[in-house]
Image (cartoon, rainbow, N blue to C red; front, side, top):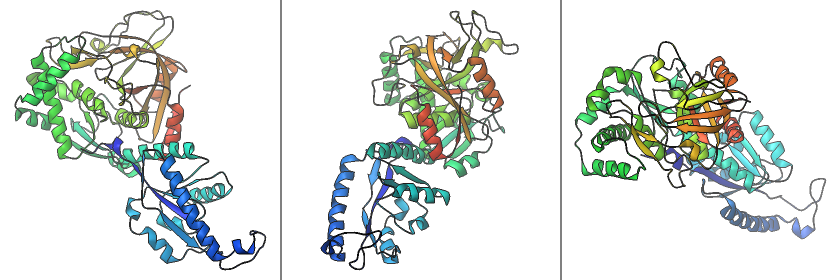
Length: 482
């Protein structure tokens, strides 16, 4: 599997070199005669090119893959000869971004994004022109700004490289996610995100052919022994690892690097009961491996998970948003009361409760040590491995949460503050309580009004401004709840 997060931005440096055809001074040109000689301009241009390349090598971030640099030369007519443009033919299909030093008249014909790093007036004019004619173009004042731009372009490229494996109940949309993104091909057209949608029964075909190998037993031992508390038998952990291994086999077969799975339809099929497994551990393990994953065949929250994981380089939690009233320790929902928990404590304000069994040990960053975890069981009988992480024990209490709308072209985001986290013995857990900037009631209303739906993806930290910058580059709208 090629991980989307490992994609780099292929930057093609182009040194734009204006060499005049003779010696003269005028309203746009001054200098000593010897400095105005074409041969002198060629010599100085070569020296400047070397200095520029040294500067690039010292300052570009590691999200950049620098392609072979070229010099494009033209004279005072500002017409670039075709033989100069032919220098770009060799690797033009690999180029993600042209980085130019000055004007390159006609480069827009390649329909590639263009960027400039400059304190002068030229990028204001050039970038403004390119953007108006429909080209992606960017200006940066310095390398800090440019590297920030590249990090966002890297996320865009990673999104375009994402291919979702959807284990589906094969209905038009999941029964519990009516707001689910309905046009999967539209996601491909807009963002480049592909998908393979197959019946969830296929995963059990893989499981039924699978033996308990030493590799599976070692992973079960590692998970069991690494937990601070393990309230589940190793044999049942093995069953969930088989589900995970079967998913990975299908992902490899179809070259996918993101995952979602039906839940209610899966449950109703009784396949999980026969095999004594749930998808919960699979979601947690995949996200620890930097693979976006979501419950309930929910593409909206998977999209938000993709954006948040690729952008923040952290894993994401997801779950159901429930309103807890001020001073209340009782939640009731007629029809399905069994899936709601009574709050473990009362709060002196309205708070948002979010519960699911899919946290990840890498929620503080893929380059950071894993967070401590417990292993619990989803079912009353005792099977169905779930990872339990105390979300309130992170280094920050601030989180960013979000979800895409039904059309997949708008993301709602909100800031939350973790107030408490509790573990439930069975069903979806951990259960996390958040204070929401802008109000819980208002946030839930916004989720309904905007056709977003319910499940939310959550990462540590305040990333609102970065999401807004990314949205401009990837071309989706952002609704900030505040």
